[in-house]
Image (tube, rainbow, N blue to C red; front, side, top):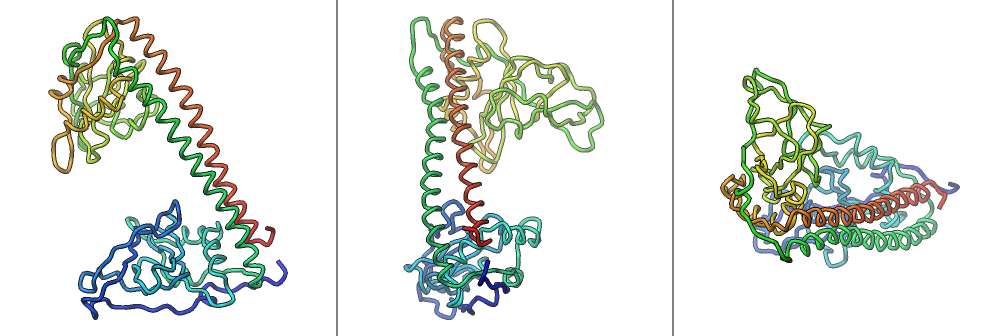
Length: 398
């Protein structure tokens, strides 16, 4: 690292300016909020056009083209971007630290340096606050930076620009492939359940299943200690994760009717996130006493003729999910009730065809998971490559 200098970040930054928009209430400007920067593209993707009288109290920092914005609120989210020419002279939130390098520092060199493990590791260790962890501008200025002469900085930047451009393109392709792999299975689901072959019929779920809401409990409950399936256990799984459940203490002894059995189906009944309403899990072999929370509904099949695995696949299709989501009632917390579930129309082929459908769907699902795993490994490898390039660049080994 011959010729490299070491100093504090503050020593290589120019002074930036602040403004009070209220002093010019009719003047218009573009406002860069903390949410304006994407931590996927590292660009300012959206701004608000405001007048001075409508400006929030945090709209105080003037920016120039080629300034670097670093969000000091939740710094590890990597909301970092270079100010483009079209936002020259506009205003950003005080939730950003504005880095305007002096002439001996290339602004793109400084931009890449902010992503290094050395700098971000310090930000993570310095951040304070539970709800909104943040670092101060002074803590950012105090960080040590090593930099070579300007021509070497520009050589490094040229290599990183080209490499990171290639990585971004490869990452976009891998993410698209991952999306396509997941869409493949949904396409098969839709294809299977939208056709109606010979011998198919349609029945309401309530014709062959009974329902029961989950249990409620408090910290002061004094009764039986049992495992419980809650909303957090649903995720995107098909089978309920019975091996990794929390335990709760119930009010008194738990009746047999509140315990789960093999081939029961569980639905998310109530949640602030509407998209979770109706999410479904199938219960496998049960060896312990396991119940389910009051935010869920259990469906129990009451006769032969419908395979629980077939039913669960249908209930996970976008067709069934959309019906359940749209039927959710409530303003802030959406809820699904037993009446709606009972009325849900289920396409039912003969039992032998149900088994064929399940075999086909699970075969496609296994292939989908294999493709998704390949895409996820590629994405992880690309992130590792970025870190390796940054490490080499700022240790003089690029």
